[in-house]
Length: 53
Image (cartoon, rainbow, N blue to C red; front, top):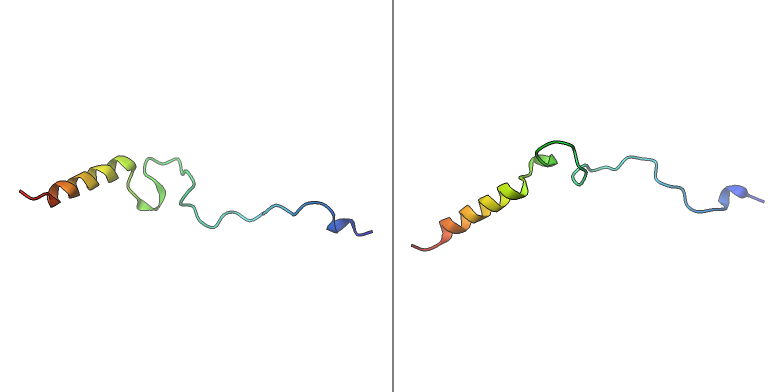
């Protein structure tokens, strides 16, 4: 009997390819993205600039 074929599938041993979703322990998110507060402030400034006078 071939015992190597029994059981569940093997788990992945390689690390993940992308680091975007992982927490990095830094103040800023990885990838040069803005934080949520900075993004909201930028969006509010853009809507204020678009408002007609």
